Length: 221
Ligand code: C5P
Image (tube, rainbow, N blue to C red):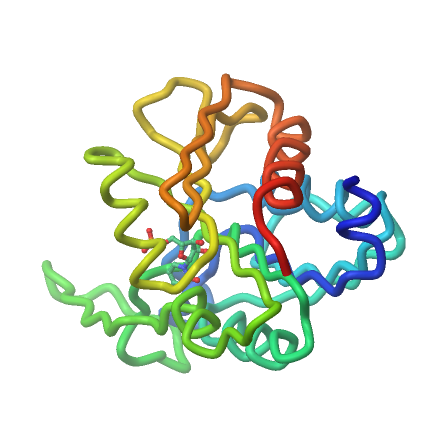
């Protein structure tokens, strides 16, 4: 069933954080390790999918030699690679923790310590998931992630509709052992048809298996 669904499919996966440069030696980033996106990439490559992994700066490497890796740093770079890969892909899974804002300006030199206060102006980054959602064609599937701290299900459902995704994988920060820097994760998958699947806390490799199984059993492309 899994093999039949995924074999030969072109799948774009984003993973890791984005770094938004302030000057040559500083950036705004987050604690994402990329483990969840990389685990999904491995599972899919192992069953014969054509995997394109677009990764922010992380300390891990793909294991399966068939994974095509695109290393990026900023949200704008990630958007650029994703929009090039998306038109002829079958499934896109956006597991990256993309920075919502970037510094308005990039200083080509190291910012000097002088005044007691330093004000940074940030501008909004494009939403990669929503951009792909607005370009989605029949036959393509788009999966997003969400990390919520309150009104989790309601917020995730709203994201699903607003970003035109087919599923949102929700991880709650309220569950210990779930989210960013852990080897384990606890997810809830929300599907278009108001169908919700809850899973217990598991190793991220097993969570990856649950995600790809849920997609293949409940979504069509
Ligand atoms: O809106 P929020 O950031 O919670 O949405 C999370 C989902 O949107 C994730 O799938 C993430 O990869 C994606 N996202 C994105 N571009 C952004 C912000 C989030 O693709 N600028």
